[in-house]
Image 1 (tube, one colour):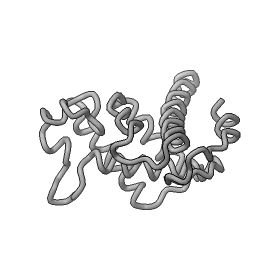
Image 2 (image 1 turned 120 degrees about the horizontal axis):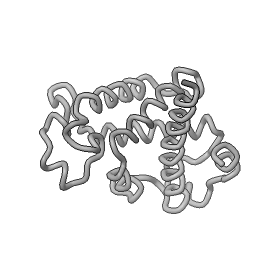
Image 3 (image 1 turned 60 degrees about the horizontal axis):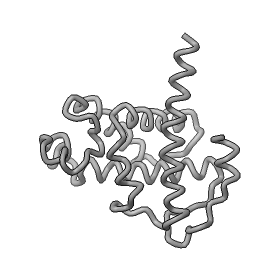
Amino acid sequence: MFEKNTQLAERIAGAISIALKEMNNHINANGQINRSSQVIKNWHVYDNYTWELILSGAKYLNEQGCINLKGYTERDLDFLLEHLAECYQHTNNVLFPNVKTTGNLPASVTHANPAKYQCTIKTRTFRTMMNLREALCEALDIDLPNEDSSKGKLNATPMSVLFA
């Protein structure tokens, strides 16, 4: 039992760490992350399991007081986790499918309920990941706003110590 929990914890930490490193490295090298940034396009290779690890891990860190997410981000995490559970059978990347896949998916997978939610699943995923990045950076004492002025300002010390 302990071994399985350790392995799961390592997978969760790995998924969150990779996503955070990719986003922070992009900001450090290129400036602000936009929806069209290469780092975001890389999310097309994530699979449903990776998304579940990232989102569930973030939810757990928030519940344990390790990070501080705003209420709307907590609701977005719950919404996206529920959406993953309901729609995983449609594609291996429900939250950020590539353009070719998106056109073949039912609207309920890519847009949820348009009467209730104005943004697409991709937009909500982007917003959630940006808010998660900010909360993780704050918890890890990484001062790297998502701005063009942040180019070259990533202090590797907290990252290299905590995620070696």
